[in-house]
Image (tube, rainbow, N blue to C red; front, side, top):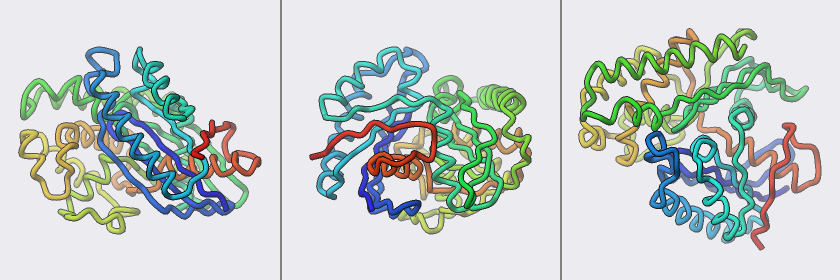
Amino acid sequence: MERVAVIDIGTVTARLAIADVDGEHVARLLKQSTICNLGEGLTQTGRISDVAAERVLSCVDAYLACAREAGAPVACCTLTSAARDAGNSDALLARLVQRGLDAQVIAGSLEGSLTFLGVARDFIGRRILVADSGGGSTELAAGTLSGAGLALDAVCSVDVGCRRVTERFLSRNDPPLPQDVDAARSFVAELFSDALAKGSVLTSAPERLVVTGGTVTSLVAIDEELEPYDSRRVHLSDLSRATVEGMAHRLATLTVAERSRLAGLQPQRASVILGGAVVVAELMAQASFDVLTVSESDLLFGLSLCVAAAVRGGGCPLPWRPRLSSLR
């Protein structure tokens, strides 16, 4: 059994998982998620701001302390959409190296594959479409995980996410004007339509849409007014398209301050939750799913499996080798 620490730095959140991995079994000991908003202002400037970088680095320092306290001998750190897009990502990577982390900016296709690997463990033998709806992008991966191994039919990354959509369309007025919401929906619909047509993720006729990420977990929490948040009521719960559409309509009528007071919603997510709801609603529409299943399993699960395999010196479940950083 290997104890591993994995950190993923996304456009909105930075996340830590510490897990014991025994073969194909992942026992998560700790999971933390912190809204750092690395991608704040990125749409306008093309760069990671100094303030956003400092928020992330402070968070990573705390995560590394947790990992060491938990006795994890190694860590792996990945960065996704914001770091892929920013023109100054190297500066952030250099400061992570100073902390002993050989961090990797991973491609959208790998991000989607890692997420599928983590999510599909709850759907063994089922043909599913997994969507990781993030701050800067949405990864789509279709396939099956079975006793014979992982069979991915298609993976693609689409540049639509809750922060990207918010900064491009929904931040000029509070609450946004109806025409701004319509423009956001048209933009998201077009990108998803093109990606689904070109990416072949629907050709295998997936029987279920499974979505992970802070937007969908927040939508469940708002819908059920979960205070405090209860992952047991969120994980593997279903959301209908009608429910998502209704929530998107409601959120569009509220100011950011009013959204921040909604039961079940983290106040730090209030500014981007409408953009996220638009993304999820249009994904369901363009992929022709009336119901989605919410998963709290995610890239961190898949990453834990790959890191443990690398520690053992065995074959990674994906054609990729993670960079390991010693915590001792």
